[in-house]
Length: 139
Image (cartoon, rainbow, N blue to C red):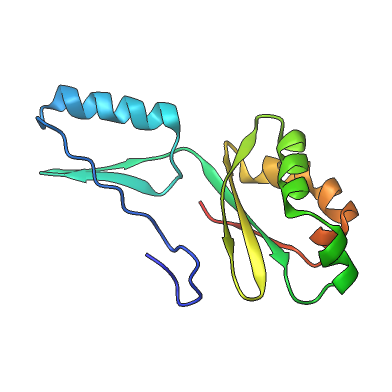
């Protein structure tokens, strides 16, 4: 589902089990736990609705309109993704992005929103493309 801006609001993934036996549902829950899904997710089926998800989400919104033209010409968003991945050092990782008319969102998921935010703060304050960025918790 998309917001009016075009940004993703939520995702719905349908999984068809050949057999809805509880042992198969338990295997599916183990897979979901192993691959990691955002907090607030749920598994719904015939007579079943169960909360799943342990990952916290962080959206980093890079300003796409208010920085100098020189910054946009000389900086690289791929460098931002690479450097943040380095500073996160396994406590979170880049999942996806969204490009809007006024900003670009980079989506990260990990064990702790607070830890991911703390680890990237120094880099964000130093790199010109990250000026005027916003961080929001999304899961």
